[in-house]
Image 1 (cartoon, one colour):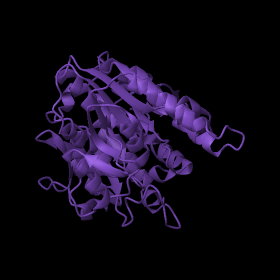
Image 2 (cartoon, one colour):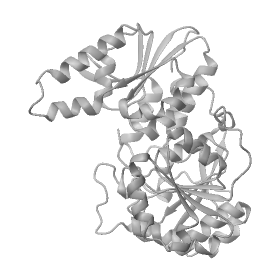
Image 3 (cartoon, helix red, strand yellow):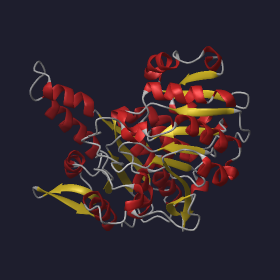
Image 4 (cartoon, one colour):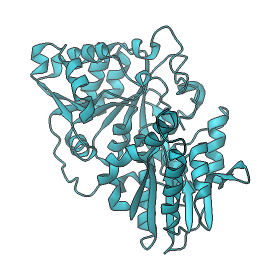
Length: 406
């Protein structure tokens, strides 16, 4: 664990996806508070620039690595053979002009290790390419790597691991709310996040339509609203056009930025989300959340980190599956095993009266477990709501860990 002088210049490197960056954000927020005189820089993939309005208040500068462009030029037969090399060389020179004191690599992959090896700094932690081999510096990062490669080791949530890596006090979720989110009035709508980059982590379009159809008896209490990125609007409209007209009249699509999504989540009675960046964004609101854990979703390491949130996970032996291999079955067993009528009732119950859920859930014909999220010593824990005094951390209860998506 690093002990930072108060006024040093530090670069945090996280070259993964949006949700992974949002899991790092609580550590950055706490680091900013603990080291107010430090100059904090952040290195992200350029597709994470859509998070800039959320992140920039906590860092001094964000650097973007043009990973997609460089990869495209590598395989483009018409591109200059040395163009990717020159781009990386120029980018590293820009970073070295900053004269960092510390570099901390939160990304456990070879690309980030190589980039970090080229950045000049007095001290480095995380995965680094050094003397022609990969070296992992820092006990916290060694533990993260061990957990990726040994299914017998008890898993830690990434948010807890990041706090440990920076030698910060344990997370306090109550301090995570963003400035400017002051609404305490819950609007009568249930918000859904249906899309994710991995199809194995979500329901099919027909299943979402069937779920919304099963929400019809509850429309007198709640509207249905669906979040999506601007480039997902057409896909979302196409999916929802299959709905009954009565339901369409009570359903609204919100193609929006992350900043607007924060506001919509804050005002919702309940957010229902699959394993995607919106789930991690909701950690910074006061809204109740139900996570639907499917496919390669690993609730021990990347589950929603929010006191009082709920996670539903179907009971199938192959869950969670591998990020890299995808679903190996003839059908999407975890999604297909869900009774959508009962799942609609579960959603309504959590939105209307979450205190009744321990009585309601056993009566539902749902092939799966419902976990509630709670913090013990300010660290992530989940428990099966039907086993009130039993913390569920045993991998045999919730599936084996999946391959790293790094």
